[in-house]
Image 1 (cartoon, rainbow, N blue to C red):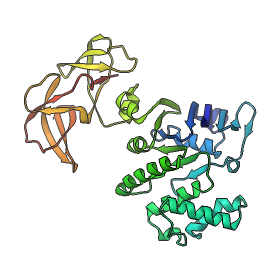
Image 2: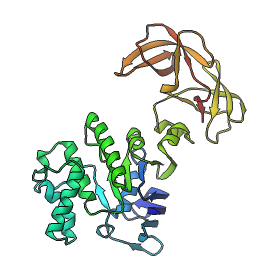
Image 3: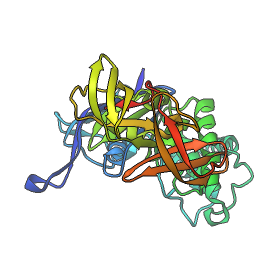
Image 4: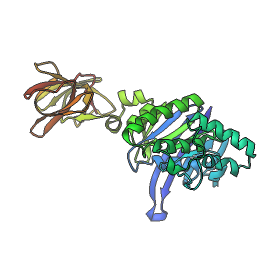
Length: 354
């Protein structure tokens, strides 16, 4: 069963001749117990879509259903108010009341729902314990770390058992190290509690780590959707391939094509690659993930020889840059490389041609 369904949603900012279309016919669903990440660059419409689901933006057309309830119907001019949708919201800024304790911040939604004091106390204690905040109920937000504040915001969203929890860049205020830890915590929590969650992020690593399915938005439309693995390993378009990983783009011209097998010229060298997407013309864009380039000191097949410019130490590996004229390639190495020229091998199945 779908906990959330969005059907052909259109939304503009502004009116009349000054209308700026933000969502251009977006359809998606969220199943019970599933985590879906809305991924995309700034301006792609991902936060607008989340806000429309929450009832904080009014679409122009389409429909939104939460479980069996229709909360927006453009054809009938019907829109359920945000407070009646009973969704859990976690904002980028956390939006905690600074003058209220952790307990009171989490209890706020329950008090609005006129729940009894004893029931509120039991429910808040339960959710704070689930999130490792059991001993912090009497503290104020300014007395907490960023990671603890984030968990209070999640506790407040979860306390009344919403059908869907909406997360808007929930980890973006944390530093890099804490962000990785919070990512693991958030995924474990969602799985353990069987939550249905829709999460906005611009970080593809975060989307892949936390979600069951990714919806990649591009200019108000869904470019591609699928599991994190399928999105990374089998992108349908150049936009998806570039957004989902760290890549080398190569200049190239197609010499011949046989099904998915493509022969092309790259910097005067004949290379073999694999066609992706629907492009069948000679105007193509070869691309390979940085981690798929293999470095060899001796000549190998399907490779280009380039001089090493420099290597950068990343802790678990070295990122090496090879340059000749305007042409450059990046590759990873377990060791720092000596100066000189190297053969950079690109396996045909990993050299994608769009």
